[in-house]
Amino acid sequence: TVVNGTTSAYASNPVLLTIENKQPSIASLSPNNAALGASATTVTIVGSDFVEGSIARWDGQPRSTQFISPTTLEMQLSAADLSIEQAWGVTVLVPDPREAASNTVEFVVGNPGAPSSPQGPSIFLPTIMR
Image (cartoon, rainbow, N blue to C red):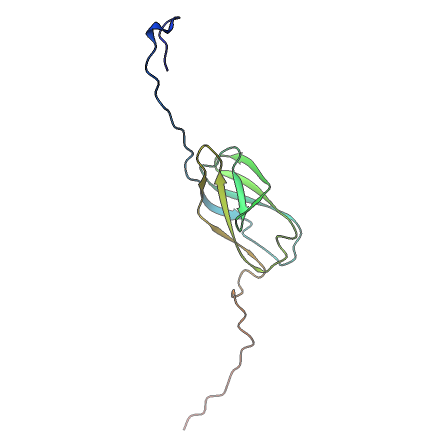
């Protein structure tokens, strides 16, 4: 409602105004990997449309998050987070009035160049030509 002057005789009709957060987006993580069994670490999340109260999620579970700016967050990972070798999904959730989740970016625990499933030892057999 808008009032013109000091009396409500000139008040407008009420209008509903809805404020929604934009959907956040993650561009990169730094670092984006850690050695298996590494100690606790801070991961910098760079992206867009982060707001105060944004929550970084590690495989869907909230982690301690510090808002730095609309393009930067810091997420705290514990040593327990880094004790299982696999690729983990990192997302950002912006809070009310309308929750919105970001894209998922992988954080690899273990050897970042290793295949995600064990391949076993390599066996080389000689080739016999006739």
